[in-house]
Amino acid sequence: MLDLTTNELILFTLLGLLAEIVGTVSGFGSSLFFVPIASKFFDFHTVLGLTAFFHVLSNSAKIYLFKKGVDRKITFNMGISSLTGVFLGAILTVYISSKNAPLVVTSTLLLLGIALLLFPRYTIQKTRPNLLIGGSISGFLAGFTGTGGAIRGIVLSAFGLEKNSFIATSALIDFGVDLVRFIVYLSLGYIVVMEMLWLLPFLLFMSILGTYLGKLLVNRINEAQFRKLVLITVISVALIEFVRFLPIFN
Image (cartoon, rainbow, N blue to C red):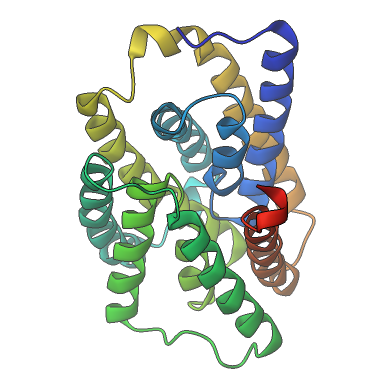
């Protein structure tokens, strides 16, 4: 049973709501923020399962609220490779420890995000192979570590999508990724539906309200600000996560 005290449940819900708002505004989903938050309350495998559960709900909300902006060509190319990557990553959690994987991911994101922010003209080339590679990597990381949205966000930002299209396309790809890993985690026992069912109202609250509030904020910023926000968010979260791995904090 996933027991939380009343105060822990309130804190978890508020932090999850904040993660969903920031994840919607930044365009690459809440898992980058939700995974560290959930890790404070649950063990790693439970966090993987809970994140997949939560993301299926939150991405459903995004697809509904941003549905007019989906880029079908990008969704297909990046989505197919993401599904393959997430299946492999989820299966490997049984055999390989992912303890140090977040450090590799955050270090890569930190360097890549800073480079793209400082040198905006030197973006990732808008090619199909880059979509396939980016999808594979983001999908694998989502399955293996619980979060891969930042990689997907960086790749999508190079294609100059309008902000609503960016969010809708990313959410639709992510929905497929989450559905696959949800099924894999369920088969591996990371998700025990009856134990998590009592959290469903709180997850629904976080996903629907967080996405709605995020959409309101997105409507208040322009395209240039949105692209910078994506990169700054990636850099900020990666830097915080990187610092957490330093010996002084362990």
